[in-house]
Length: 134
Image 1 (spheres, rainbow, N blue to C red):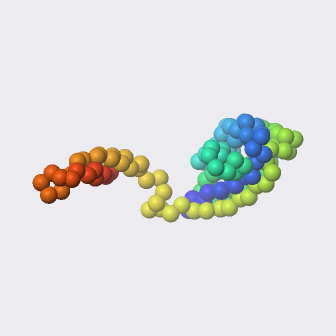
Image 2: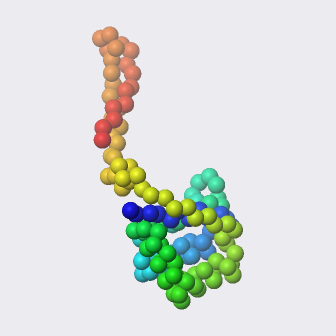
Image 3: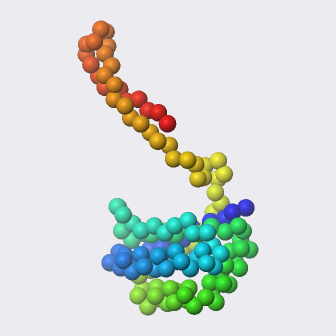
């Protein structure tokens, strides 16, 4: 079973660039220590103080082993120190989820919208109809 650690951050919106650096640092650290980094996400539109990180593991035991390596790693400790000293993370919550097999990592659908002129009763009046394809 693969589990994903879903990390929800409340960040200081005025320190967005510092959080970006923090997340980029994890981009090097997490894979090296055995986690599968799915990504970090910054706010773009709407709420400006929420960010997310997603890291997958084979099991909770694999996560616990990873956490032990994290605590012992100099670069990881330095990144945690950056967050403490700069105080750009105001709150952090972790939730563990598992993917729904039939609804995860599906190929992207390429929707095509084609406008066609459709006539009613011999060509009058004309209206537009959207046709969608995958």
